[in-house]
Amino acid sequence: MSWETVIGLEIHVQLSTKSKLFSGGSTKFGAESNTHVDLIDMGLPGVLPVANREAFYKAIRFGLATGANINQTSSFDRKNYFYPDLPKGYQITQMTQPIVEKGSIKITVDDYDKEINITRAHLEEDAGKSIHDMFEGETGVDLNRAGTPLLEIVSEPEISSAKEAVAYFKAIRQLVTFLDICDGNMAQGSMRCDVNVSIKKSGDKELGTRAELKNINSFKFIEKAINFEIDRQIRLIENGESVVQETRLYDSEKNETRSMRSKEEANDYRYFPCPDLLPVIISDKELKEIKENLPELPEEKEIRYINEIGLDESEAKIISSSKTMANMFEAASSKTDDAKLVAKWLVGDISALLNKDNIDIDESNLSAENFGILIERISDGTISGKIAKSVLEEVWETASDVDEIIQSKGLVQIQDESILEDIAKKVIESNPNQVSAYKAGKDKLFGFFVGQIMKETQGKANPKAVNEILKDLLK
Amino acid sequence: MDKKTVTTISYLSRLKIDNENEQKIINDLSNIIEFVDQLNDVDTSEIDPLANPLEKTAKTRKDIVTAKNLKKKLLEVAPSANEDYFLVPRVVE
Image 1 (cartoon, rainbow over the protein chains, first blue to last red):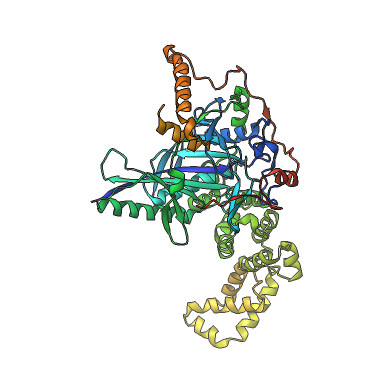
Image 2: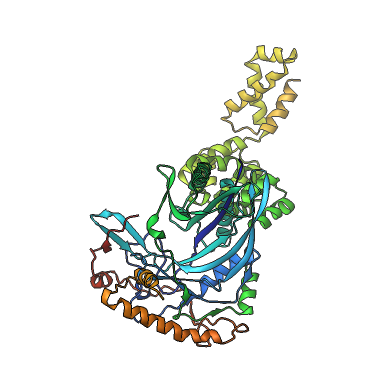
């Protein structure tokens, strides 16, 4: 029997506003517990929420970038449930009139592209944080996060494998960071994801019963959790049992999903329009302004890099895929005329260093200015590519200035032909055997002479000049 | 409105209903629903749902942090707290 997998994702994106969705509380991450809590976040009696307009603007940017409909009139509803980190006993969300509907995004998996439709993206407030393991018999509650604006992005159930789910998540992350509406920091929970998984017999029209996997916050775990869940569901059905519609928690340590019965007992959120909030109306003028100020998106960058700067397709793809890489590329390129060389180094040596240290480029010691100067010194012949590598490594460790390193270590390339010629003559004189072997037809020995000259000059000789001089002398 | 519905709603809203009051509440709720049900007689097919009876649009805020650190005061008024967190009976996942 062969099975098809049907997956839909709900991604919660924390919008990077300074203040909360309905209060003037700060959204800054990592503050001391319960210090960013306003009376509104506490849900104290007599307070009224007032919507943060910037959250709407950020949501609209996402909508425009995914070709979605923007509902210029959108309203809020209450989703009622009890949990200690939700002080009001309800979450304010957009059920009936979400700000964004019907968009789509392109994903790339191995060797194919696929368009995934986005059902809706709506604004809602985040809950606080429960701390279960710190107190004997009690749960601690930190409400700093309560009320932080989230954009919940709901995909159509059009994703057919764990790999596609990861690609979709990555595409959304790339987009929201380029749009500057979310920092994309998964470790800090800025993006979290619920996954709906079901299976059906190949060719069946009707969807199977789905399980919802909650709150997964890394690419690796999305893939593992989905694959575990697919296997579990297939096993159940092939053993004559059936899948129960329920919420399941992924345990990354045991690599398994397990039932969270508690939440399912009576899953009825009794949505109704929030009487505290009037509909928010976005004017044509506001919409137009947001549209005009949309930043250049990854795909547009990629095309520009190829057509206008002349990068290879693969280079353009790698650089445009991350906002920090693209920023570095553009800033460094403005310091030198050789943007192509900037790209080569970014994709080559610098990517290797980033992988080794497992960091993002904006966490490294390399500034765009320093990087641009390094490339400029290679292209104006001050240093060789080989020396540049060691300069880069030093900058990587110490963040020192490129020109200072070159000066203080005397790394300036030797271009002066008369100096190089003297060194070449010395090398030839002291290696008579190699010279006669070379002249007898052993061409490969040419590299030996180049190597000797490099050794004499500690790698500072200009390789092109050395080649010419040697050819001349060994005629 | 039957006993089962009332039991479910009272669980969801964490409101306890005494046994002796149960039948009275079922009757009251039935009467309320019957009263509101009169609205079903009106043809609303051409009318958009109303998010709010005030025919106005929302005032909104600029994205500015205005809240002060109220940690001490807020924890003080909580039924149970230590110096850093609100405390509730253990919730196990």
